[in-house]
Image (tube, rainbow, N blue to C red; front, side):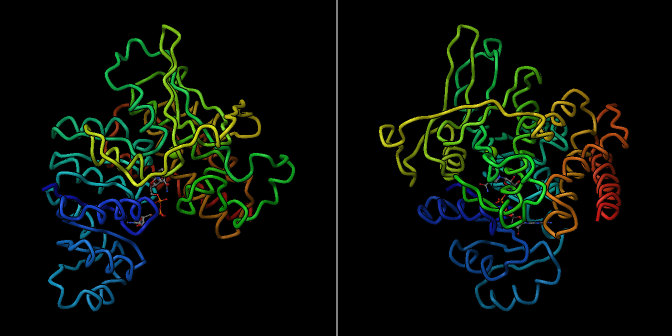
Length: 385
Ligand code: NAD
Ligand code: MG
């Protein structure tokens, strides 16, 4: 029986994972479920999946979680240390689906007991890619990508020689504002940015899709995970979100991953890998789908993509700085402190202000750079406000 842990079980990826596990509950034993402030959902799923331990990342949730799980025999814990302890409990397969760089340390803790880390938390690769890959190697752990684009690329690369890869083409829906004139973006609201045309996801990644920061992170994620040069990675706008990414080989062939936009495909693929099992994902009807269109993303309109290229070139701590500044700027946009277009300007300024020297990445240096980038981004946010 496969043992499973879900870090961030109450989120969008977490809930899709819970759905897949619950459909086949007899095949799995759940070690830990962790969540944030949605205590009811965490408790409900812990009971439903008969988890060994349920952890909320925030101390203040402990009492309600304890009350909801009283008499069930499920262990209860709260706080950052409890989260890391739960992540370090041996499990064959751990879903890393916490949002933000808060997911980095729990992911590292999970890698240390070997097994498989299904990685939705792209921030860990952006902040500390080399560290994550080295830790996986040291402990004989496997990292499988869950981001739909990277799962698509991983599948297109199966059995291929990396030497034969010329380019990786990452598709982007373009997000909520893909057809908006630049002028109108200045006054875009949080509600408008939080409505994705094709995918149902957490609010933060949905807004990042509208600003193309999500795609920017995915370029860095591909660079780190697949070890390809920045100039081999392209983004292309594909509004229908049916092709999830492509790999172009030196003989001119392009392998595309095509399917309905449903995250349970990428999650289920990582869950069943290296096998393919049936999944509750609707088959794509090509005739009904009709046309698939593509266009070039305009980097003037989307400075996030240009910044991602700079980060890939610079390396070192620039990914951690980029991500933390983006997270803080996004907090500012969600709180109504800054406008939609201010986010990229803030990230660019923080990258200019902070040294990203690349003499090796350690966890401490990543966490320090993360905190400092948030502090500087916070200061700029206040001055824009
Ligand atoms: P979400 O906001 O829906 O859920 C986030 C989860 O993390 C929740 O369980 C929340 O309780 C927990 N959490 C939040 N802050 C935390 C903290 N400080 N400490 C511990 N736990 C905390 O997010 P999501 O959309 O499910 O995304 C999760 C991750 O997966 C992100 O890294 C995102 O980029 C990535 N991802 C998501 C999708 C998607 O379809 N939603 C697709 C590709 C990649
Ligand atoms: Mg993606």
